[in-house]
Image 1 (tube, one colour):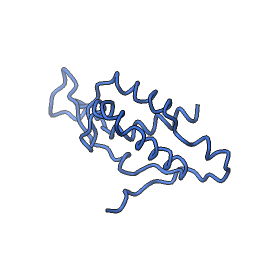
Image 2 (cartoon, helix red, strand yellow; image 1 turned 120 degrees about the horizontal axis):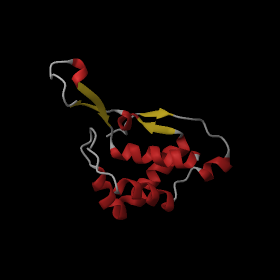
Image 3 (tube, helix red, strand yellow; image 1 turned 90 degrees about the horizontal axis):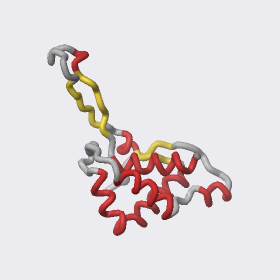
Image 4 (cartoon, one colour; image 1 turned 45 degrees about the vertical axis):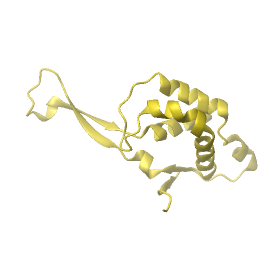
Length: 123
């Protein structure tokens, strides 16, 4: 099975930058800790954030390696940016009115984890 397509993010040429792009265990624990306090609805993959929290002890090093590889390549998987549109009814509005619903796009939790790792690396 071929890997999912990825979106190029940046072109890295310096060896010093490559060292800084490796995701550390401390960084992973920090993003997982933030995820553990959330109770969010799963995205298109159907995997809730709570599952990622529970499997991190077993799969954490593999996921960290995957994130590090994508950071080095400057890529972000397209499937992590594919969302599921859900319409939430607004209270007190007629159901047949277009303005009676609030659109929300649900994304995969693992993609959101990677986004948080990238954000922490930029700050």
